[in-house]
Image (tube, rainbow, N blue to C red; front, side, top):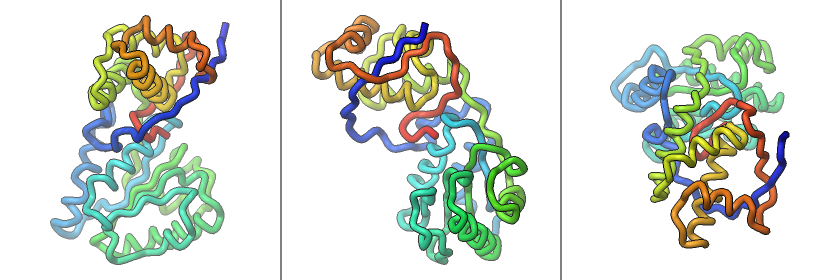
Length: 252
């Protein structure tokens, strides 16, 4: 039976999304290409300068874009999303890297602006564009001309993490936060709660905060105590219900 609970989360700022805290797994080629993109642009003309990355929610698309921006020289990278102002989609020769998240959720005006931005990037050999969406270009719910452009460059399907990869991500994220995580905690989270990485990371952050309040180590008994506490209220608990997952911080 599915039990519904909710934890009230009052979280601090999570560690930044970087390539170091992204579990590449089957996506090693993509991560290597993205990691080397900024240096390759600086070295001279680059043939492959447009990327489209697609995958299910929770597979790590947003994390990779934030990692790109984080590791590019200040003011030379721009992160764009459905929440961005239309003017932000304008080409700026001072910007070498444009990242565009959730293309499938862009407004009609933003799609037109992205189409124009794509053409500008293609015309300027010192700039690159990396976009993400929830489906392959051929199935993406956007304007036909934009769909065609997104399929022109390198297209990668971001493979979801297997359970051992999710456990490794949780352990790495715990280490980044200075948490001594008991070995049985990741396995318990993966078998008793929603298995997408945003939910798992929210639980880890809540558990970290609770352990500080209780002055106790992060163990399975502490997790059970937190879930039984009067302050607990909303993390969907679905034992054995597998879902696609993402990486720490900004998983989408």
